[in-house]
Length: 617
Image (cartoon, rainbow, N blue to C red; front, side):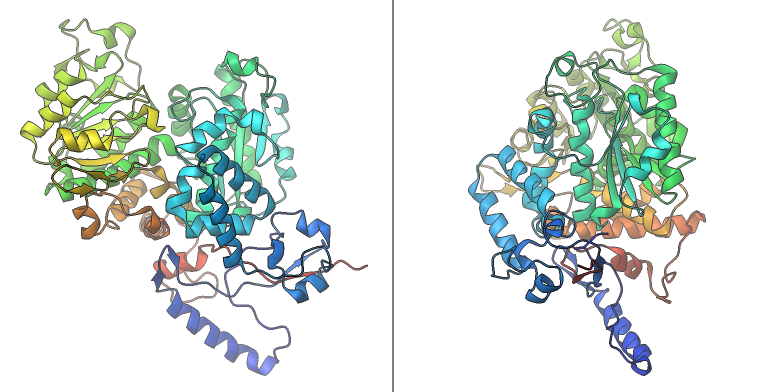
């Protein structure tokens, strides 16, 4: 049904004679095979000729459908055959001219929230143009559709709600999920991003208003990961909310009840997973912003049964591991030389640490030794030995099954972070606490710089108001020796001595689009930890020496499609090594193609396709 997206593969002219058909096809495939080996700027140079598409709609119905609508880009012949003549101004614009106009309007608006609203409006009018400008201007626009702006969007979701996007599975719909999924108009869904709204960024329980997160994530899947927008589906599992302000809000769009808990909650998630995999057996499900107490058991329950992953636990851990590998390389160290202080013991914090431990094990270290390289700090201080030195606050509250394995007897339970630095001497600070800004103090960073030539400082909490410190502070406190990666984007930092550093944004968008793309292309049965490790290694290799010399551990966001391509290839290669891939290169009659060519061919690039209508007067 999608009228304005790229469908891979050559299009055979309708009037082609049978005798010339095979010769034309061979020549077309040969030309395309050469193009697929080339990267140009932010996307693949391979832009196959768009397939002509048929629609049953005509006239105003096409203009009102964002999947078909091209605005003033409809050609003169299309206007005739689609019954659009006279319904549009006579001028025909190219998609490039449309892009220029949209970007001019966006740049004239200083308020990022209003910029986001402009982009939402475009998304509701013209899907192809929306994703085209995201592809061409990812570095500039990603902060407007994702962190940090998306947090404000979720907070204002009810007040600004104008058009439904995605699907809502509520507690009122239990028992109907298996039929509800057929209300979704697309039969070929590749990626679902689902949240229950219980832990939106660092903002807490936003209930159904958390839908802004899956919408933003899946826009990045299309722009950064090359998955066509009609093949993604944002979802909210509306199990209620415990946020009293939302329950009292007349604009709240969700179920006005307290959250389901216990067996009722897990039964509802079970019903959802069974329903979506029954309709779309090849789909990848990405769990997003579930509170820790639900995120960890849900991942443990489903990860070996379904093609799924949790972005907060595994995605954040994977991208952070890639950053640590690159930072270690920049500092002249190996991953196994590093030690860590992690601020935050939620799903993100523990998931990051577990992913790094897995990486250290893959690099040759024993798991026991790798675990000893970490001190995890809660709001009560370090999780350490219960010797009474600091009152043992974490033990007094009780260490649950997720936190207990992280007890490090090298420090006393409740030791403040500043003392952990001086006693434990970590080489890397990980900030994943999502608390008010300032957890990483000047004293901590200066102490690290006293024993570490290149201290790694990674304040990754979102939004920027939650960042554990700023890059400016990290560079100044370390006399410019720190290697910095953050969760939200920050401006370049110039020091008094004239040096300028470009802090990297340690953002999940570097990793999750490639994982979803790779797993969906090869139809991997599951997404194992070893696949995440291979993804992190692949991502770390995209950062070049020039970028590292500027202080960056991640590539420029402008290279995001190259990152997704590299990650997808790593996922596919590893899935085949493990024997869990159900699809292989060449399965679409492109024999002899490499993994790299296969991924290139499958990546969506937004451009207008010719349209004709089967509707008769």
